[in-house]
Amino acid sequence: MSRPEDLAPPEIFYNETESKKYTSSTRVQHIQAKMTLRALELLNIPDNSFVLDIGCGSGLSGEILTEEGHIWCGMDISPDMLATGITRELEGDIMLQDMGIGIPFRAGSFDAAISISAIQWLCNADTSYNDPKKRLLRFFNTLFASLKKGGKFVAQFYPKNDEQVDQILQSAKVSGFSGGLVIDDPESKKNKKYYLVLTSGSPRATEGQVNLQGVTMDAQDELSDLQRRKLRRGKDAESSKNFILRKKELMKRRGRKVAKDSKFTGRKRRPRF
Image 1 (cartoon, helix red, strand yellow):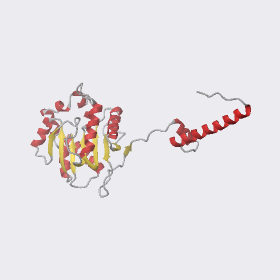
Image 2: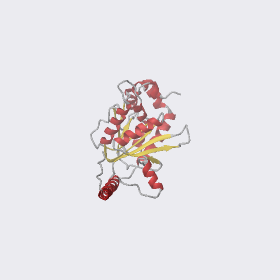
Image 3: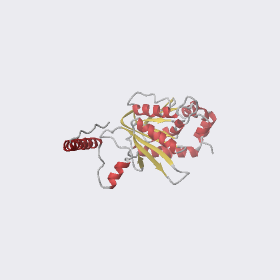
Image 4: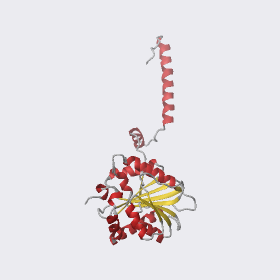
């Protein structure tokens, strides 16, 4: 079965017919509700938080935000999806916006943000001038700015392969986010779900942390071969400063030894270049 991202850009794929079909499907409604509730569980935010819904579509996830006691606004690239949402009398504000161009809100506007089944579209080059790497960086940079200090972001997404997962994680990290990946039902091909769980700095003391249960955090930088050998021998890894000081001391000792040898033999040693 072909993925929607491989068929057409989202603003074209989700036309009027597809938008109504998607929104009226009870199966889709159930899945969207389940994933939105899971995202909120990972966010762990207090009631009445101001939340941005990125790729809000026709507002299926927004309805869950309202039911859970949050104030929200949403953005989506598909005019037909948004038009379908307007007919459903949503309580959140919605706007037409391509997330790959950036999040168009002033700094520190939101307590948190969610995205359900959307950010994988950023990994696709729909046109010759759309560079996935640049779009991902622009998205995460502007999202980081739009969140309050300690703001949180959880995105459920469907990666095509491990390369897309790495692209997304790396772009988030470069933009200043900390966090990692939660994979629900990792052994199931059908029910496996990816959740990106991020925070933009340290939260206030009165605010809750993101729910990091099950998060696979970013791996630490790999040690060099020399450091590994030293650690295997039970020695601490030598810092760069200590390495330089040790080398200087060794050169001094060699210099004293050279002077002594020259005096003893009565010969001048030729300098080495």
